[in-house]
Image (tube, rainbow, N blue to C red):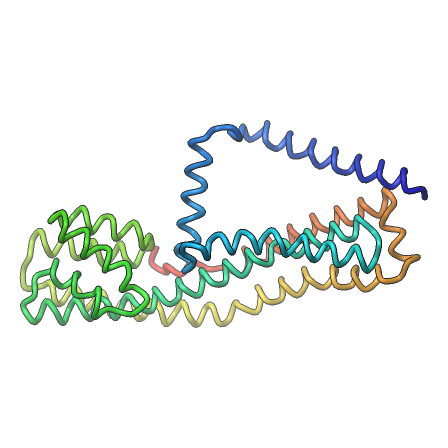
Length: 291
């Protein structure tokens, strides 16, 4: 097949993908040009990176690496095989790797936060029994609480001391954590501040015990179901590794430059994406057992 014919087939493939994307956008009525929507999405993405522990220049570094990895891998595969469709397919396959790393990092931090909340409740319980007021007990968590949560409580302490509005600072703190464990703890704190009473210690003790039990059960479930996610990753990676090995042979690699070859690559990518999504759904579970 001539080089001009290969370029024409590649152009047709790009036009087909663009047409599918335009149909998808029109059906779902996605607002592309809205500046406010883009700003909201950018803020949500920045918050996601912050929850994963990436701040400042680390966020930009992650974006740069996310772009460079598929470009470098695609260039390397093209150098080895001299086949553009294979290079594009492999580059597309490795593009989600940085996002998978981000998701794993986010899940790990969520586990650390889940394990920190019972200790936070115990610290509050100790402070309340010592006669410390609830606002001051929360402020003390900025230096006596678990290491992973101290930054959040330091922001709360600065906001509370500057404004003097406990509810506003507590609401801001809860939005920064944005998980159900924090919601439970902060609702108990609000209730204790509003009504007071001698039962506050008992409520905090029961809350700590419930969180530890939920943490134990969710850990057992995750350990039993983690093999499903690992199997999904292996199943998705295997076809692309085989494709790369086959493409090292010139006669086999040239077959993927045809229209049928590119259709096989596209259908394989769609099948792998759907299978991985399905396996993730089957292997996932809700950490909040009493949701």
